[in-house]
Length: 190
Image 1 (cartoon, one colour):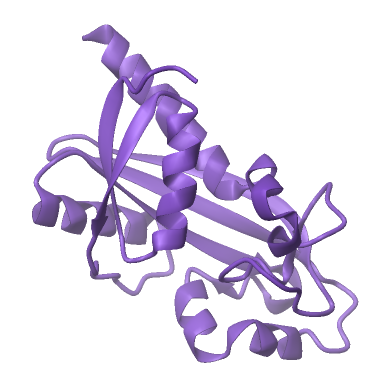
Image 2: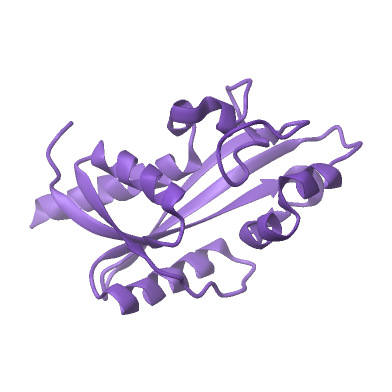
């Protein structure tokens, strides 16, 4: 592992996301600190718009370069639902509710999209990661969020069952790696 060459603050209330972010960025030489703050999440049909506004809100609170992450689970048989409303849907009906909506459906294809938004007060950049997969027939043990019901393409088990190997498939990792490449490129120019 290379020494940390850049520092960025990750703003969220989700400690689980921070652990993933910190681990992924450390492998790319970027040190992440955690600002545990509640961010205003606008209601929008666009993950991009939500991520942009969260990044601006986070920067206003921490006053230093910041990244935020917004993601969504898009289930094909449900017309892309819950999509950008994934957080609310998880809080209200959870994994059991999503499985109930899919009862009797053969099509269980889904994707996870992650958008990492960076903002330093002047420059706002978005980085996207996506992973295809399917919704499992049952809720598995472990993980957090939708991990117990989402099996990424190329794996026979859910994110929850993959445990430490989740990042081998993760949509969040793909977005963070794009951010890290950009961040290190910018830093090497200065």
